[in-house]
Image (cartoon, rainbow, N blue to C red):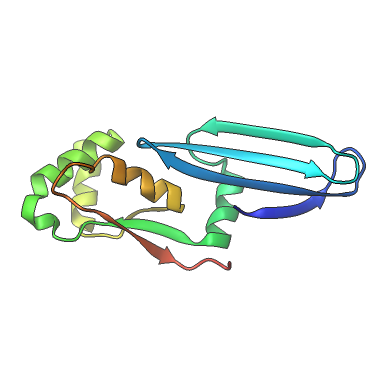
Length: 138
């Protein structure tokens, strides 16, 4: 998880702020925590969904962008597209854009954002893969 050194809001000493996101059962969640060793100031936050934009930008910059590819999707294109549509709640026109992007990479984002799609394909004969789309600085 990325760790950022910042000024403590209570004592102005140095605090550590960490955060991260994860995928579980096809859902995203995130958490953050800040702690100051000097005054023991502490705060935590978490929520479902994507990281807040400012944290997501840092995550992508530090750890890179990940995406999903669908190798051999042509073997069962209708089923692949149906599962993609179901997991994202897409319109037909949105799905058409994705179809034109197959085999991918598609859905660029954090690693957790890419991993959440794997859940929807468990137990099927469709085997999407997560790939690093763009290198981060860490």
